[in-house]
Length: 201
Ligand SMILES: Nc1nc2c(ncn2[C@@H]2O[C@H](COP(=O)(O)OP(=O)(O)OP(=O)(O)O)[C@@H](O)[C@H]2O)c(=O)[nH]1
Ligand SMILES: [Mg+2]
Image (cartoon, rainbow, N blue to C red; front, side, top):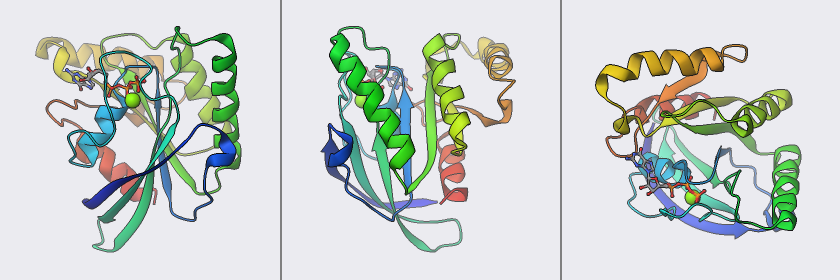
């Protein structure tokens, strides 16, 4: 698919702030600071549309983006991307963490136009318990998803194969085919992620 245009639409701090939409929506989820916003910017060919930060916990709400593209059949499509707040951010209060869970639960249950999740993990580390919980949770709802292992550029070339194999075996019970290695710095894997989105519109 080919992105024509993208724009920030709005932020939702509570689930009832989400505006009903019939456009296919793709959500990006992962632990704080893993690179969700950077991945979105890369897919959309934008430098700083989704705000990135060195400090974890930058994205505290669901940020909705409007995307216009040509799909692989050259048909013009309108979509939404949703940048979801990261999980596992220690410096928010218990109350906020609770709200995060509630917001996510409402999102996955009631967002009728949700077409798929891109779950983002850090290629340098084994899956955290929270990653596994998120993957199982999304799997249990039957929503299509892929797992993007990001920051590939930070690995030595000689390590990439074995590390990818290990990560695949960690997600093996779920579906290893769904792992795509990615880098927001080099754009490696970008085409594969866009093709997956295309096939799930
Ligand atoms: N080298 C490298 N750095 C990356 C990559 N992706 C993200 N980063 C860096 O990682 C940091 C966090 O990136 P963000 O995109 O803000 O992460 P996020 O998941 O949106 O973070 P929160 O919104 O705070 O949860 C930033 O300093 C990015 O520049 C990548 O593929 N390679
Ligand atoms: Mg972010």
